[in-house]
Length: 332
Ligand SMILES: Nc1ncnc2c1ncn2[C@@H]1O[C@H](COP(=O)(O)OP(=O)(O)OP(=O)(O)O)[C@@H](O)[C@H]1O
Ligand code: SF4
Ligand SMILES: [Mg+2]
Image 1 (cartoon, rainbow, N blue to C red):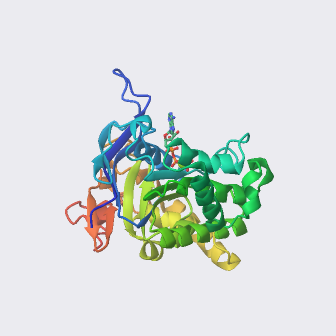
Image 2: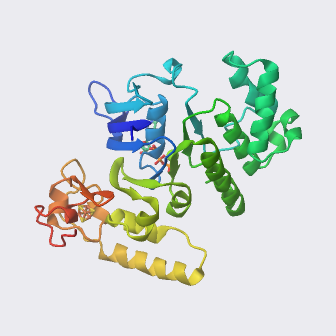
């Protein structure tokens, strides 16, 4: 299958100048999204998820690597020069309050992208928008109201409708439900899943909650400090994670069952208590980025950055999967 999106060894540095290397928010990330596929991108705050999304959209300039979308090299093409891809690649942001212009009616917000491109007459655009509104579960009378008249969940439905006006192939969803209450989250996630199967959309679904991502995605990529730690099929990754960081993420995921939550909390405390106090410096390119927090870290982890290994349908960057690393807990 030819990938719709191909991110190859992507790096993004902030604050880079001729004299300073800047801060590597993303460091050598590779991932693909196939047509109609939903790929999750998870990791804690600051791990570089949004930066990857921004680079794909042409809103952050890569300092290394390449980006291909729908067969075209878009690595060095900023958003304003993406006329050829703009319609096929859309985004839904986290904040439903900040992402809609408060002075435009919903009709204006939704029809503008259609009529601005000259692709549709006003009447055809109105018809399309009416259909979209129905698809995202909003009443037709929503069209002539302003964003302030809607709840967070309804606004996110409007943002989804806006992303769909151009019939995109890929939608980057950057934490689209994190700002919503739990019951609204479930409704919006169901909507995204329905739209995907109805319209054959592909998603790059950014989130920090593995349970949420698992429900929406086929595959998950786990990010830590701008680097990929693990990737694999969503349903398996949450049950049998390979990488110590993914295991910590799974243990930290909120669960509804209080007893299960308590067990996980205890497991998490045990994990943290077991993390070694490595006397060797662990920061920098010559160590595993997770070494200072990893309960399985050994001397080699502070000395060498692990390569990426393929284990069945997974990839994992950890010395424990490298027979030649010298780590004492080698796994298959
Ligand atoms: N415009 C910017 N200028 C400088 N540094 C930035 C900028 N945007 C992000 N960063 C830094 O880059 C790193 C990655 O940030 P990013 O927003 O991509 O993380 P994230 O995984 O999306 O986090 P969150 O879950 O909090 O949204 C962080 O250290 C952040 O402080
Ligand atoms: S390489 Fe070492 S420190 Fe890094 S995740 Fe694996 S065991 Fe832990
Ligand atoms: Mg973010």
